[in-house]
Length: 286
Image (tube, rainbow, N blue to C red; front, side, top):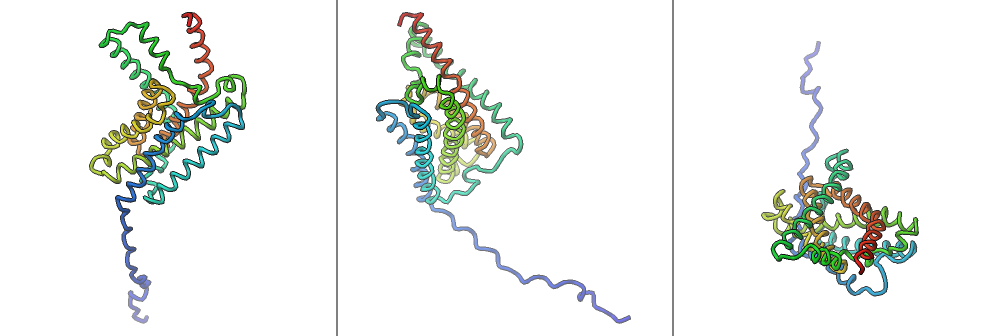
């Protein structure tokens, strides 16, 4: 037998390849532009709502609702694209990874109920403290709540929501899941990304994410001033809780599901709620 070197049986190693150069970090100026665009969106929405004349934001019929939704998607998509072009945020920046797997939808359902209960408790507790500290009578507090109730008529046409099934279901499904759940939570994740990139020592940790959720909630609540101060308070609390959920899971998706279901239930119950409010007004002689 011939003596064959064992090295001949080992395939040659591929030539060494230099590692790719590290990605060039995005400057903080570009991230500042990103954050400024995101911060301006709810403020612009609030100013637009305050200046609006002649009817609800979502129109009086199906055609009007679809037109408004299309315009809102285009407007948000354009602003989101400009912010992304400035920062080149990746999916980890925007928390777009699907976490925690198949638990996303069940957790979203549970969180939707929990957020509603928590927000109601916070608002009721706050009103009770105000009533006790200012010695306001229950009747006066009830009157305040009625005078400052969420002005849902600035958002939807109550007549169409009550009597037009197509308008009702488009509002409950399209507006709640796409315009509310997806669009608004993408705004929140993008806003939080800007905070983390600009001030990582403050906002990059999980605890810092909770703080960032509070900052985002204040901006988001300010965009709903035309709906009344109680609506602003409720939306700020809900926004904070949704941001906290997003920061807890490092993913936007549980918040998207929770937000969409929260809005869907709220809009579906509006006709019933408004009917009972009107009945209370008639009983009280107003």
